[in-house]
Amino acid sequence: MPSFVWAIAAFAAMEPVTAATHRFVMHGPGLLLHRSHHRRTHDGWEANDLYPVIFAAVVCLGLWIGFHEPAWDGLVPVGAGVTAYGAAYALVHDVSIHRRLRWFGERRPPALERLAAAHDLHHRYGGAPYGMLVPIVPAAVRARASSSERIAPAPGT
Image (cartoon, rainbow, N blue to C red; front, side, top):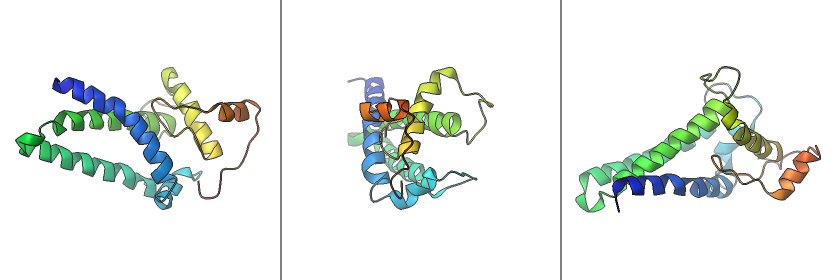
């Protein structure tokens, strides 16, 4: 299979991997770090910022192996796809939704409004959707949001 296909497949596979990691790690045993992201004020760095550093270190290790071990050269296009997903995630989540960098000024690109609305539901209710680029909003969450019912998130979320 051509390398670019592996890179595209890795990019696509990252959405369910990211959603599962968010749900079962960040809202599970990793909540100690992730809790900082669900606080109302975000001034500078937060403990949750260690997650992308850890994930990037794993990808860098995979890329290093792929570049230095011919039998593992398939890790290079996979690492490129994962890196591209990480960049897209950071652009959508940190730059557009949370506006940690003011690249888009006061208005986010209209194409990203739906993603911002889904992420707002995650912060509002402390549960699904856990995905970022293709968030799946459960029907119950959509119904709760449309009825304007505001429920406090579960403790620690």
